[in-house]
Length: 302
Image (cartoon, rainbow, N blue to C red; front, side):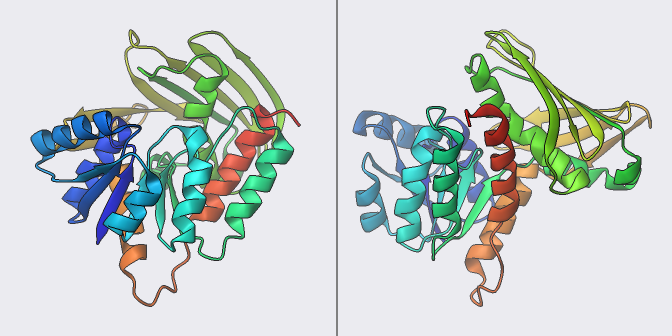
């Protein structure tokens, strides 16, 4: 299986690491220019031992490298057009969250785009909203959904986003966790506030009171903590480019759980989908599109 990565620096580099680890041939990358493409391809060779062809034109990449699958790690506003070009070639897509996003869209424009993708005859899309994996790993420790009355999520990264863009970047993780806990419901009683480096919101989801508290900035210490009915869970990462381990420290239960790398879990499901000749499997578009639609309802102008 040959894989092309659109945007192979930043998070795209971890896509390259993971798919290479899973025995997928990363054979090409798309960059914003030939200069950055050359630099990124050299970096992938030096750090991961990968030899990739680089392009600055998506049509040329698709026609020359002929990938069996594509991952999309480019800026959010580029996703929509790239998704349609790749699907037109009948190539499955693994996309970084959000599936697509343009803050200049109103909700009506957004909905039209979502429907175009949803109705595409070649639709085969997986989205990396891997926050759900953390909930799945502790489901046996949690009360039934009907007994859940509070969910708090505090996520701090060293990202570059400001103001409302912080929500656009981090909210999909929290929504994925809620969907895993409760299924698909509407958000009610929504309130938000934000500053240059921080975003907060609170709302109700399936009768549960929810609080999201996000921060981004180079000087912040990374943090990923969530609580369910006031019982706290802390993500602990042992990370390098070639090796990655993740644990959940279950504070109230006084135990630490090693969990499978959430990204690797999602990537493995995508590979299985792509290599299943019978192709009876469904893609994972519906759950991720519901996540995206929830975010659009509260962040885009109606």
